[in-house]
Image (cartoon, rainbow, N blue to C red; front, top):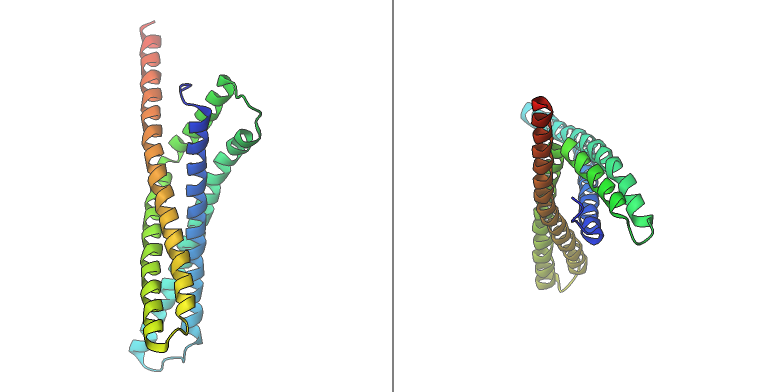
Length: 210
């Protein structure tokens, strides 16, 4: 593993760190949307007919589900973040040059953490991709809304819509960029893990023969 340069390791570690932060943000966003749905539903006029009441209850249940998923995902992301924060701090504040033994220790620590949480981290990549696509769709919708506002009212809320479009499009492109970048690095880590597992199996066979 020591053939990995310090710069390459830093890039991979930063991609990993940002991916986890994005998932923290998306989890918090799911909580916020769930709370907004519940509050909006409860502030509406209380329905008197059974179909409307059932619909309101389903909407509230949907909001509670969003809150629950958001809380779970924030806690999961925070746990993954704690696992790499120590290595990242050591990397950021370590004096140059970095000795190969220290770099190898960092790589082993990160790869071991990735190996332990590989299924969850893969879901993080998928969720970030979905979140990025959602932000892009919202940005396009905001852009269209801004054009319509200028066409109908000569401005009005068009500036706010364009501002929201810029923010959402930026978030979408950034999220997709880091999700794609981390997917490349995770493939490399999978190869490293496979190599380590083959070495472990070879060592085990040697010990059995001996």
